[in-house]
Amino acid sequence: MLRPIRVLIAKVGLDGHDRGAKVIASFLRDAGMEVIYTGLRQTPEMVVNAAIQEDVDAIGVSILSGAHMTVFPRILALLKEQKNG
Image 1: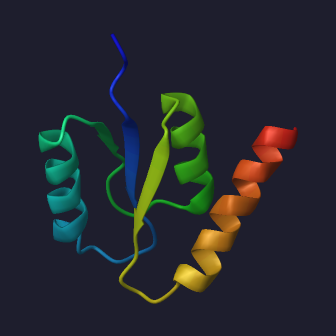
Image 2: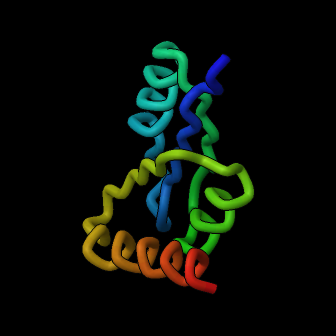
C-alpha cells in the first residue's frame, strides 16, 4: 500500500491570521493527504527543519505580510543546503 502524500503547512512571519492555512490543511486531509501544520510565527529555518524531520513531499507556506519574495527564496536555499550538505 502506498503511503499518503505528506504535506507541511507553515505560517511564516509575525502575522497571526492562520484561518486560511487551517482551511487548506483541512481540505488536504479530506483529500487523503497527511498534513503537518507547524502553527504560527515560523521562520524559514524552522520550516525547513520540520519538513526534513517529518519527511514531507510538499511544503505549503502561508504569508499575508507580502514577505514572500524574501521567505520563499530563503526556504529554497535552505533546502538546497540540506540536500548538498
